[in-house]
Image (cartoon, rainbow, N blue to C red):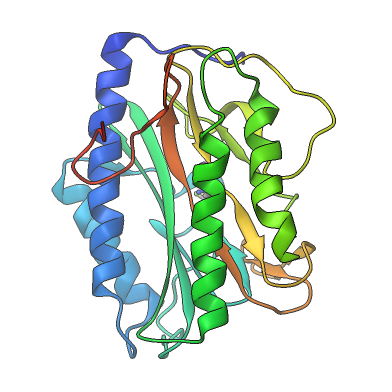
Length: 255
Ligand code: MF3
Ligand code: CO
């Protein structure tokens, strides 16, 4: 399937999907407290998604058994919510969620600390977020796809963090995963040309130590190979002739 350019009507649906998803994630971040289980948060997230009349897109996707991916500390992505996983003060938790509104997807992720925690984790989270914004500063029609990737790499490399390479961002729209792939690490070419009304999920996954990851025996949970923590930040964005529009924020479009 080729890269799709969305119509004005499609963009409007993706704006609505994104706004709802931004609200869901904001509420999850505000709700997380020590003593909660990751299952509690999955139940809350699914309830919030359905409250908006949306469908949780991760549920049953390739057999995934929950609505939200909740990854803690050394878990990078695709952590499966569990009644046995009790969150503790200082844990770094990532909420990755997707939903469908009138046939159109939005996908986004937030990382946060449970309660208060070490400065080095706060920095890892902030720098991961910053790398997303540095990356999308290049996401303008006429620029090229890997300008985003190289800007994320430029943003992260000075800190010596590991940039996960095994998982990447992606096009999004009628499907959760569309072409093109959006790597977060350095590329030797500039890639395809970005065009107005392309929609992308840009999602740097940044580890405190090695960039190498492994998948646990549950066939889902991706953890860092050295057991050090990782952060993840993602939004669904719209390419325009000027600054990209971040679709997956509460309150919708930011001017
Ligand atoms: N959020 C992931 C992504 O960005 C998808 C989660 S896979 C699922 O591609 F199976 F958990 F849904
Ligand atoms: Co994604």
